[in-house]
Image (tube, rainbow, N blue to C red; front, side, top):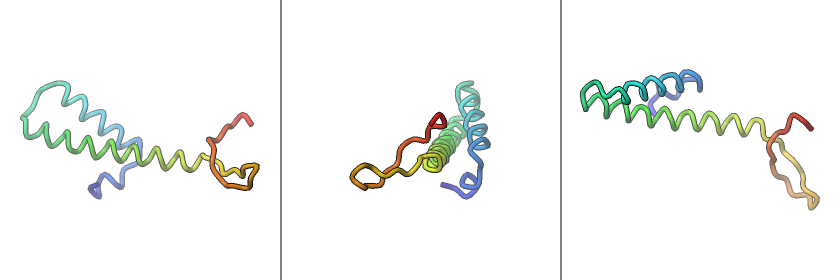
Length: 79
């Protein structure tokens, strides 16, 4: 992943990804530019997925099972 993408927040990466999708869907522009934009879009998608996984890990809670084994379960704000 390029350094400029690695430093992006989830929201900024999503905004760039959405702009790329709009441009590609319009069908305007040169093929080489579209291929480059697609490649950047793939890297942005991976970055967003990593950010989401990181956020999920932060909200999973650590629990001890009845046998003493430690695991995680999704955080439930209701409980």
